Length: 305
Length: 282
Image (cartoon, rainbow over all chains, first blue to last red; front, side, top):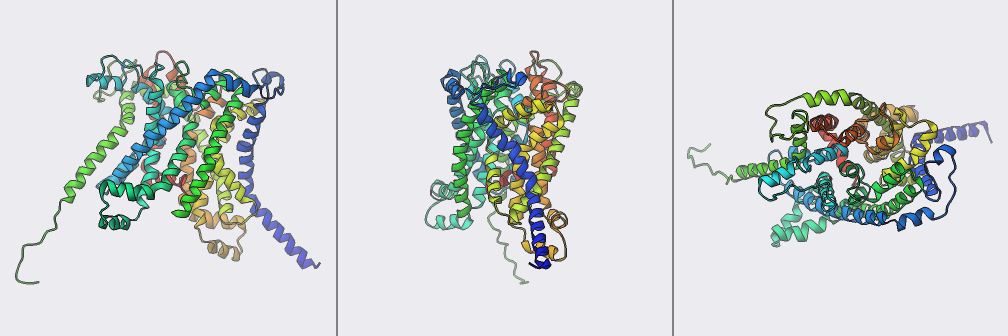
């Protein structure tokens, strides 16, 4: 081997190292702040990891005890059911209203761009701010909603929106619908923009206008975007925590407890990190299942679009 | 021009009136959607106390809510600002080189990293908080600004990588190659060629990394315990939790916590809109 060749090989290796250095910080961060927590949660879920662990460092392995305790806990079943209702209710409301607004704002009229970007505001506010504001709006005695409904004569007694286990989940879902509308509008609007005008012109020649053009042209062409919006919606909604903690704290009587809030409560209120981890692993499993479906749908949308 | 003047054939101009009708309905829709934001502003200007009779309009604005909010939460607002700026800078510093490498430098195995980044956005925050608490405690990183910055960047970094990678994918490789032929090293080419050209996506990524950290509640709730280091989101939450809630001070704090989002939406509308769609469909 000549000195020249060694030199070249050395410089090529140096080049590779420099290139890897670009990725290294991100790779290390991802490993420490995503990889490690996932593994740690998995390990903790098989351990008796509680308050005393932080003092004596002992966390004996207890097999599947945490999972058994979690699955037989009536609050877990309640939380699972609530998570399902919360996710379905939120998604249905956000999607229908988001699509309606996106269709409305597809038209061009003066100020349409400005108004559409104003719609984004609820999405940009810290979630805990929205929670505080809605708590005040939904307040039983002086809240704006009850005052409004009483003023219209629709109700005679103020409704304890967040304080009654009959209405709390509904109220939390309504607030989350409000929060999710901007996201739906933005994505559906950009999906609608991507449908070429000629499609509608050709459709009009064949007699497809109004509702028929919506059913036979808009919806089928929007389908890839719709599936992305809904799947991302599921993934984002099942992990919502700030809003519920801020509005009700999971109460009253666990009426708004979800998997995410229950996992928080287990770890940070009851200081049973083992069970908290078991619960959040259930949450991860659900999130990952939808993520895989999402990534596939997204790849399909990218290929078609 | 002909001498014969015909009455000008004017196109049927029904449109403007109708278009303005659309505008009117549009304004109404936006007004309904933004009512809570208005209500926050209105309540923040009400006199202190539990506001038995907040009017529908702030006809007699009272700023005592703001002075109480600033007295109680001023320190927390500052903490949030420091944490958010820190998380924003950290996110960009880590994400920008990575996005460039993923899009332009073909390195074996980086496809896996991209996949991990995509999946990481779907991991519930509580999973990370659970684990971080157990590590932060022995390391003494509970109640620390660096601890919060590192934790909050967990939302900004994946998002910034995806946004910047998407824009760098379309960046012509020939430009970097030309710079390399001119004797630029990788680092130099990245710093003085790639970064300036990808300014837009850098700004979008920065804005969102900042907003994610500013809005963070979960990490603040789980990784701080005392009053010394307390982001304003947590300050607001503890404010509502008190028995005798002073709603005008709460709403003033809420308004102050909303300012960054509102300001960024006004001065950087273009970048905010780009970030809103960019993270999802690509």
